[in-house]
Structure formats: structure tokens, C-alpha cells
Length: 322
Image 1 (cartoon, rainbow, N blue to C red):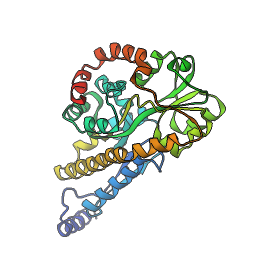
Image 2: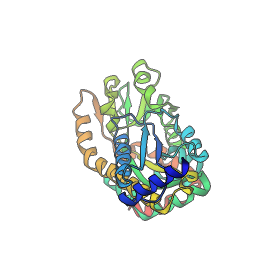
Image 3: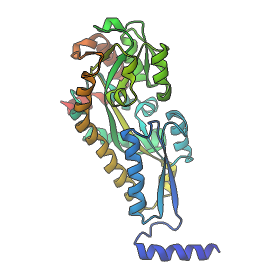
Image 4: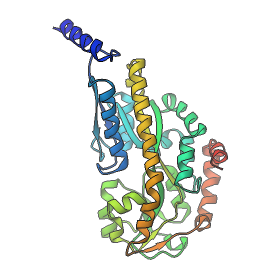
């Protein structure tokens, strides 16, 4: 029976032109973003592209909204080979490979176009080479989630107004250090819990991209939105190094080219939509503050002092971002 199955699949391969593997594979791809998010839509499109290019031999099942666990758990699954792929923030990667924390340098870029250019640049691409050895994953390419803003339950007029407040953050060191430098109480919290936490006062403010501020209606419980653009928020497409090792050259080419295409499209989508989203945020029935870089100058200096040593690649990224 096994020989017959192999013969049949080889016959199909000879007709379709895809002959890199005998057995069909349904890859599992995990992520934390909800179904309406740009990242999730890109993951679905990636799966459709893989299926088309392999003539249906391979497919990709996407698991959004932390269905497979948080990012730390998904990294562990990738390392073990029990998860095939993931679209993750660079947060958890930076916890394992400190150089990636450099992407979160305050005001590393001026705007979303600058972020796009940096993530597609030579320095960012060269950093991917560290991942197989240091994190047990293959880094294919980058996406992003625009720039970071702040939504506050209280009125904010200066950075001093944030002192002592509990601010929801993504759980990783670079952003924690930034908000600690502001004198706030950075509070890690998974995305699904954020709306209720802001509504009931469990947190005083949240660090968030403008897309989700609008789509998930966080503004409904805010008195101030600080459109500070203070930090870029990269994403990365990963494949388990163990899974990658078992793929043929043709399979690797299809996966890497399809994933990179979709991640580049994610970046281009934010370049196109970030401006209109920011304009929409300014029209909400909420006070909007749009400060300059000096708004967070003290916290920025403190962050640079620590992470300039911890992530030496920062100097090269800044040079390329100029």
C-alpha cells in the first residue's frame, strides 16, 4: 500500500511539475493577531500561495489570536519542531537575541516609510543570519505593525502626566525599559485582555498601533490619544529550523519567496494606510496629542545608554536609517 501511495503521488507530481516531495504536508502557522488584522490576512494569503505553487501538495493552516499559545510558547514549539511556522512580533526574538532589541530604539525612524526602508535594508537582512544558531529558527523576512502610540484613560498634556500610571505593553525588555524610563509601571498583557483592562481601569493606558486603536475601538475608553510615533513595531516570519532541515531546495524556495512577498506586502500596506488611519484617529471625539521627539527625551537617553551596549547593531541601523 505504501509503495502504491508513493507511485501515485509521483505520478501526480510528474503531471503538475511539483516533484520536490512525495508526501503532502499541511504546515501549521501560529500568530497572536486576530483574524481582521493585516498580519493574519497576509498569513492566509501566504498559505493560498503555497497551495497554488505546489499544486495543492502543501497547504498552510493559520492559527490566529494565540490559539497555539503566546509568543514565547510558539518560539519553543518552533524550536522543538512541533510548530512549522509563525508570524511573530520581534519582541520574543529580542528576548533571545538582544541585537533585535535595537529595532525598538525610540525614534529610530521618522515615519512609517522610514521603518519600511529600514526593514527591507541590508542591516536588517543580515541580522536574520543569527537566528538558526541562537534561536533555533529560520528568519525569512520582516513585516511590521506601523508605529506605536499611547491611549490613555486620563487626560495627558506632557510625559510627566504618565508617571506612576500602569501602561499595557507587549512583554519584552526594550519596551519595558522605555516605559520604566518614563517613570510608569509597564504592565505586560496579552492582546485579547486589553479592551476590558482599559475599560475597567485595570490599566491606565496602553501602548498600541493605530490600526488596532481603531479596529478594536480602544478609543471608546480614552480621554487622550498620544500620536507620538515613538517606536517602530516590526514583525518577523519564521520557520522552525528542524522543519526547514527536512525540506527540499524547491520547497524552501517556494516557502521563502511566498512568505517574503506577503511580508513585503504587509509593510507596503502600512505605508499606504498609516496616514489615513492617523487622520481618522485625529477625527475621533477624543483629545489628540501629537508631540515631537523631545516629548520623551529623558526616557530616550536612558534607553540609548542601556541598549547601545546590549545591542551593538543599533549603531549600524541608525546609520542606515539616516
